[in-house]
Amino acid sequence: MFVRNLALAALLPLAFALPLAAQPVAHHVLDNGLEVVVIEDRRAPVVVNMVWYRAGAADEPPGQSGIAHFLEHLMFKGTETTDPGEFSAVVEANGGRDNAFVSWDYTGFFQRVAADRLDLMMQMEADRMVNLSFTEAEWLPERGVILEERGQVLESRVGAQFNETMLAALYKSHPYGVPILGWRHEMETLTGDMAMEFYRTHYGPNNAVVVIAGDVDTDAALAKAERHFGPMPPNPAIEPRTRPMEPPHLAGRRLSFEDSRVGTPYVSRMYLAPVRRSDDQSEAAALQMLAALLGGSAATSVLERRLNFDEGIALSAWASYNGLARDYGVFSIGIAPVEGVSLEEAEAAMDRVIAEFLEEGVDLEQFERVRRQLRASEIFALDDTQRRARQFGVALSVGLTIDDVTGWIDALEAVTPDDVIEAGQMLLDTRASVTGYLTTPQPEQRAEVSQ
Image 1 (cartoon, one colour):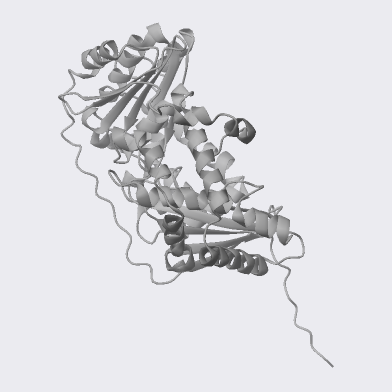
Image 2 (image 1 turned 45 degrees about the vertical axis):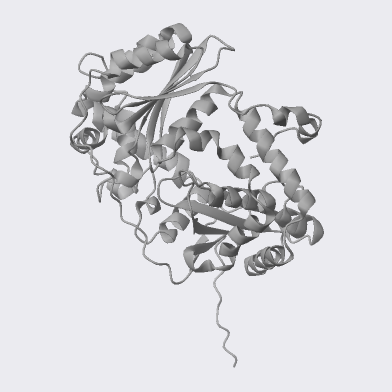
């Protein structure tokens, strides 16, 4: 991530000396196992209330892909005391907005409202944590909604379909290879009973994190959490998560995805990579710096500068790293070649530039510039209350701690050029990777018969 105005960042060296923990952060665990995080930010009379469940698409039973996302929709259908849709209607009537999201590792719900409405939001969230209720007349149309959503956000977008195919090839056994939305043929068989079983198995205070950020007093917010969530008993059905792990990857995989909708063909490669580990984020920090150096900026990154500006081979080239996951991270690189350069030639050029980078080492001036950009981006992120709340929600959902979140900048600061090169050696070993070509259908070759 990079600060939007690099020139401004360069003129504000004093900003980098300010403490990163601009807002106090409190962490408390209730007797029933519910974790509560409170972030005070008094700049505006607004509060963000989030509830995170440590259950997502990677926890679904075999044959029920999409059930976590289906349940997320059904959580808005009502409880034993509220009508379908009443939750969001109340939020809107109180001048707020709400939504939800699902990942492989977690499901989250949030409301952004005036600070004096926090008590009401927590009351409603506590209600649907244990009292969810819906009928067939409510869940059956919602199944149609999620099927339509798959069509709109995935099947109608060739790049999304390509990415889904790449992930399915990257993971041999682990459920990260199953799409969060689910496979269509399995989604069509989902039922309300399946969703309720997933709810009863994974939802409860002992598998949840509440994050409250904004214009609140910490002690008052914790008292509200205790009042609304504290009386709930732990859900005895919740057990430690067990998932299939990846066997050794002994050979890289390759695929070609052809579609007439492709406008710009490109090469994409994904590697299995380490995640951010609690108490030792050094490896993940080095991978984050590596991604920023290789592909973080269209103007100055190694891949863009060499392949786009110097050699004129690429329209664009990129690198990224995502280590915020419970089991496996992903490091990605790719290149979209200019017309007249084949995907095979583009892939070879990308691999050549990466090999040269690892052989020659890191340019120290570029290294310091990227380090400064990453630090600036993280500091400016403190100004976004909801983003700050999300940082803690994601981290605690995947096994990190409060100290890991607040210490991430220090981990990035501790990375050395040698650490980056060591991390980059994984890019020379394609055994734990999948390489994909996204392209248009090739014309059929007809054999010529001489007379």
